[in-house]
Length: 417
Image 1 (cartoon, rainbow, N blue to C red):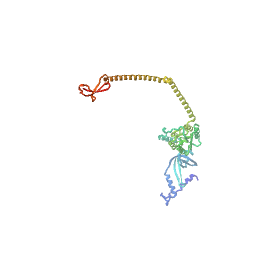
Image 2: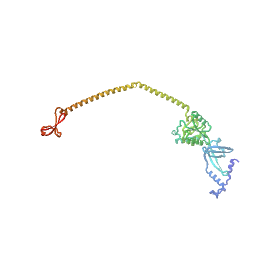
Image 3: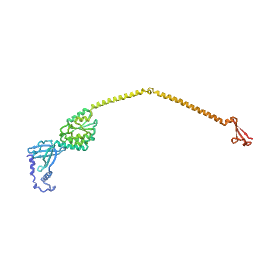
Image 4: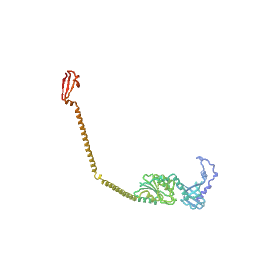
């Protein structure tokens, strides 16, 4: 019996007229299993048809029957589908094709199987994919995830380079060999993932998160050596693109596809045209750096030599000036001026002292001439009474008054008559 015959045989097993009306079941009053199956069949039949998108995971054509499995593009989900009239369907369907299908769920009570009847199915054309990618691209641009302001600069010399690529792929070899050629001391942390097909996007997302969380990784390269547009769709996966945009570590997208570049190129901090180009961007060329260092040293030596020579010339010119030719000449001139000033000062002081001395002698002579002693020396005397009063009138002196007479030299006592 074929699979179709097995499924069709279910159609007459359940006698819906013999089933009692729907009621609640319980432990003491359980449903017959046939009622459960019939209720499921009736409920599922009311769902109608639905449009889905997926990838053909299994394809089997048997005479007038077609059986295939569809799986979700990004997650682990799969359904079985069938068609009893495959002549109405495209003839070029194959495993791996991405399709859009109109499916009608059908439940078969006898076997308890749920299948999907294919009402319509068609391949997803490249135009459809590009249109969806364009809508996602515009959404990313509107959110600012592609703006230049968000781009992080690459470190001049990363401590460790994270590399996400296929295992033993040409892209991995290109990056490792070219980086080693440019900077032999560079260190890597390589995470090998799928780069197309099933689970590629989840694996790459997990790798980005792993390397982004490593404090020793300073930059991340996501590399693949090109391919057809359909092969590179994983690098336009929305979840992958948003994970790359949210990473704190700078990311280099090196998918190696010039035309119709994946969306990862837009959100990455740096886009490399090939894995080899990524190697050139991630580390400097040690030969070039040594050349630049050598050139810089030569320039510094020349500038220092030129500066020293210019300063030497300035010093030579200064030494040729009279002042520096005989620095003591300036001191001698100042010393001669100082000695002249000292002579003038001494003469001025001597003249001032002489004038002051003459003035003092003149005033001494004047004082001497006006001194009472001088008068006494000329023969005069001073008469005073006993109380020391000077007597000027003889008429006022009574007889017998005791007198004191001051002479030029000495003093005598007398009594008036």
